[in-house]
Amino acid sequence: QVQLIESGGGLVQAGGSLRLSCVASARTFSGYTMGWFRQAPGKEREFVAAISGTGTRTYYADFVKGRFTISRDNAKKTAYLQMNSLNLEDTAVYYCASVWGGLLTPRREEYNYWGQGTQVTVSS
Image (cartoon, rainbow, N blue to C red; front, side, top):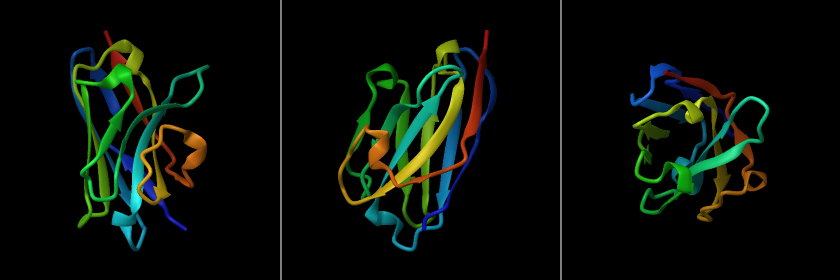
């Protein structure tokens, strides 16, 4: 069982930045691919970014390329999502998720463990 706890959400003006963190309880954190997803009101949960266990490979949804950066610190068992140039459409609950192994996947059904989510609200 892996527990994931997100933090760092909040209210930010359009054009601003936030950094989300996800702390994991996994004993072998480096063995897990970590992903970030988001869910806006009335919409399905969608993939944002993923990072391999070693941190050497990343994968982004097209709508965040160049604005968001996923990273991880295996010594701290923490994954991050740096979000820059935020716009109103980025308003959502952001979730981190994990899956054992090296597959970088955008499919939410592939992820075994999920955090409780952190709210990001972008205002004009």
